[in-house]
Amino acid sequence: MSAPPSGPSDAPPPDDAEDAGAGLDHLDDPEEGGAEAAAPAAATSPPPAVDSERQPAAAAEDPRYLRCFIAINFPVPTVRRIADQVSALVPQIAAAGLTVRWVPAANIHLTLRFLGPVRPEAVEAIQARLADGLRGARPFDLDVRGLGAYPGPVDPRVLWVGVREQPALRAVQREVEAWMQEIGFARDERPYRPHATIGRVTAARAQPADLTALLGEQQNRGFGTGRVTEVVVYESRTLAKGAEYRPLARVPLLGK
Image (cartoon, rainbow, N blue to C red; front, side):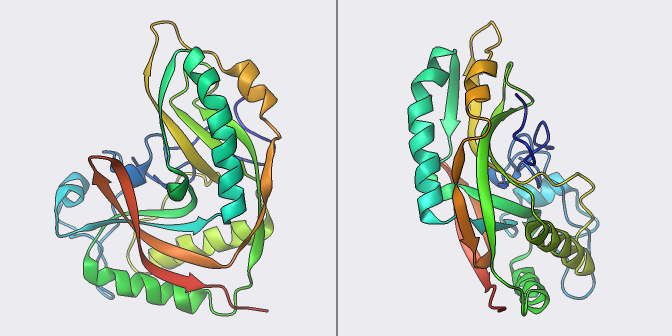
């Protein structure tokens, strides 16, 4: 199995978002600080996220920049269900010969847009554009369902939980993408496939692991329907203990 129905289509293109991008947080999860993170284009007003003359990798390593992404958090009961199911699967995943770095429950989220290296002074412009665009936006529900792997169940590199696509989520994601382009970020050409990364394979046996049967049983497992009431701008920090996501701005959905 490569993806749940109406969820990520067979893989994360390179959230957490979180080492390059949107959608399935990209193959190596951009929010964790990988090398493939797409850099924002320069802008004149508001301040550019990165200098146009600097290379993306240079900006990503520059302590003057913040590594940022825009995301939605799942309700606590949904996160608990995901964490419980992950705990149940850990022995089976290990028995298949995989060593996985599991995402802490507190870090599980749905990425809307990975931003990459951002100047601290640009965060205010990002928040302002989101607040203006989301003024009057109504809360909506997410259906979190199904487990999968990228690039597939044989020799996987990333494990994820799927999110069913729906008009409200698609509309918000497209609008966020458009708003970020307005303030100077380069267009993200990769298709958006809603998901949450739950684990990254760090080691495997010489013979490729095959999780086809295991993930097939999990294809339609439901983790709950939760209400989305805000959009959050996060900074991702890479620490010795792993990724830490610090909220920089919260934009509530207050429409009725």
